[in-house]
Amino acid sequence: MSQAVPAFVISLPAATARRAHCAAHHARLGIALTMLDGVDGRLLSDAERAAAVAPGVSLTPSEIGCHLSHVKAWQAIVASGAPCGVVLEDDGLIAKQFAPLIRAGLPCDQFDYLFLDVDAHNELGPVAWDRNDGLALGHG
Image (tube, rainbow, N blue to C red; front, side, top):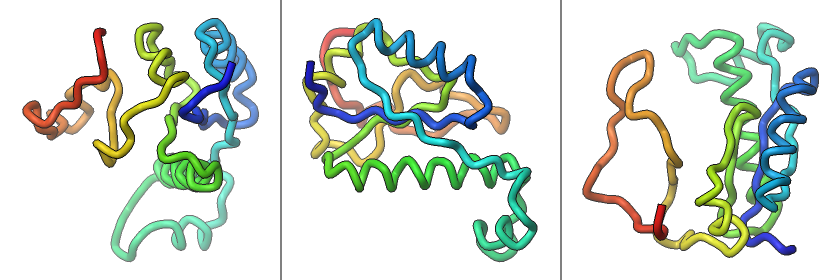
């Protein structure tokens, strides 16, 4: 079965159980995944961490690793030649009702960045987004 939207999973290489769970879930949905080795910011040198953030910005090694891992994912989408892609961390699971859109395609020309089933709060409080700027992707 072909898949219109490539799906990439960011995962640290040692997270074998998480990788296996993620792969098994998506295989049941008929979604092919490309595993990308995440960057462990704790293993970077001070100079590598400093080069990854803007001057005056303070991020933890884990935050820097997360950032660099997502950069790798965006680079993988560009390299795939696809108009868009799905990026998951290894604890993210695509819902069954969304799987047909991954297989058939998304209206990639109608959005720049699309959150799927994201909680509207994080540790800092509400996440800002425009409720009136939604994109109907189908039932469910």
